[in-house]
Image 1 (cartoon, one colour):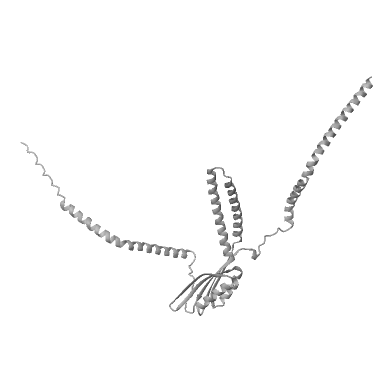
Image 2 (tube, helix red, strand yellow):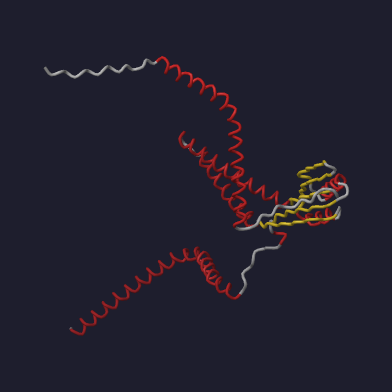
Length: 313
C-alpha cells in the first residue's frame, strides 16, 4: 500500500511538472512568435543605429591616424578686396587721363570719379577707377607705363570670414521671416495679428540690412578700386603729411585743437560785437539818464533838530 501510494505520488508530480513545462514552452513559443515580426521590422533600424554608433566611435580613431580634410582655401575661393593708388608725372594730363579711362573700359571696368584742376600754368587730375579684381594687377601695370611713376600703393583685405558669416546669418534670418509669415497667416485675433505683423516687419528689416552688407562686400570684392593721380611736369608733388609719433603727435594735435577752439571763439565774439555795440551802448545811456533823473527829483531827507535839554529850576 505504501509503495503504491508513493508511486502514485511520484507519477502525479511528474504529470504536474510536465504540464508546467509544456505551458512554459507554449508561452515562450507564443511570445517568440509575437516578437519575431517586431524584431524583423526594427532589425534594419537597429542595424543602422549600430552602424552609426560604430562610425561615431571610429571617427576619433580615424582622425588620429589620418589628416582631417582641410577647407578649400585657394586664392580663387577667397573673398579679397584690392585697392591701389598710383601717382604719375606725365607730359599732357588731358591725354593721359583719356588713356587711363580707356584702360579701365578695356578691362571691363568704369570711372568712379574724375577730379581735375588747372591753374598757375599747372594741371592735375585725380581719377578713381573700378575694375574687375582679376584685371587689377594688369590695369595698374598698364597705367604705370603712361608716365614717370612717383608713388604706388597696393592694399589687400581678406573678408572671407565676413562673407561666410553673412551668408549664415542671412540663411537664419530668412528662416525666421518665413516662420513669422506662417504664424501671421494663422493669427486668430487682432492683437496677435498686429504683434506678428510688427515682428515680421522687424525681421524683414534685419534681413534687408544683412543683404545690403552682403551686396556691399560683393561689390568691393568683385570690383577693385584704383586711384590714379596725374601731374604735369610743373605741378608740385603730392606728399602725405607725416606727424611724429608718440608724445609729439599728441602735443601737435592738442595745439591744433586749441587753435581751432580759439578761432571759433573769436569768430563768435566778432559776430556778437556789432550787436553788443548797437544794443548795449544805447541801453547804458538810458540807464545813466534814468539814474540822474531820479537823483534830481528825489527830495533830500530833512534831519529834525535835536531837542534842547530841560533846565533844572
